[in-house]
Length: 263
Image (tube, rainbow, N blue to C red; front, top):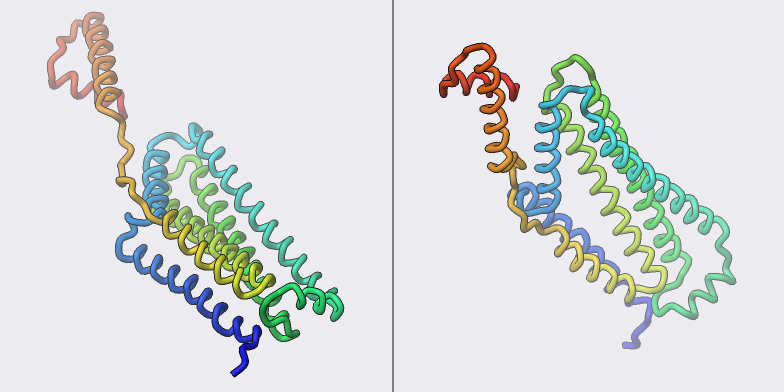
C-alpha cells in the first residue's frame, strides 16, 4: 500500500490533542484531590491569606491592595484585547484566503493541505482564541467585584465573598491561558502535523514542570523577632505610662495593655 502524506494528519494531530487534553484532565484531577501540589492551589492559598491579612486593616489604609488589583486588571484586559485582536486577524485571513496561496503553502507543508483541513485549522484557532477572550473577560469581571468588596467603607464584608471572587478570577485567568496554549498548538498545525505534534509534546512537558508546586503553604504570619520587638515596645510604653500615672507594671496589666494596643 502506498503511503500518502495526507494520512499523517490523521495520526499525529489526534495524538497531539490527546496529549494536551489528557494532561489537563490529569491536572484537574490533581487539583481537586491535592490542590497544594499544584501552583494553582498555591496561588489560591496565597490569595486567601492576602485577603485575611488585608481585612484586618481599615478600608482607608488599603491603598497597596488597590494597586495590586489595578495591575491585575491591566494584565487581564491586555490579554483579552490580544485574544480578540488575534481572533479578528484569523477571521480576516480566512476571508481573504485564495486558491493560489493555498497551492504555494501546499508545496511547503508535508501533510494534508486540502480545503477542508485548512478550514478546520482556521476554525480551531479562531475558537480557541475566542474562548481565551471570553475567559479573560470573566476574569476581569471577578476582579472588579473583588475590588468593589475590598474598597467598601464602614462595612463588615465577609472574607469568603472576596476570596471566592479572587479564586474565580484566577481560575478564569488559567482557562484563558490554557486556551492560548491550545491555540498556539493549533497554529503550529498550519505548518504541518509534525510541528503540531512536537509543539503539543513540548507544551505538555513544560507545563508539567511549571504546574508542580514544591513550596510549603505558609500562613505568612509575622516573625517571632518582630513580635518580640513589638512586645518590648509595648512594655516600654506601659512602664512610661505607669510611671506617669502611678500604675504598677504587672504581667496581667501588661497583657491587657498589649492587647489594647494591638487591637
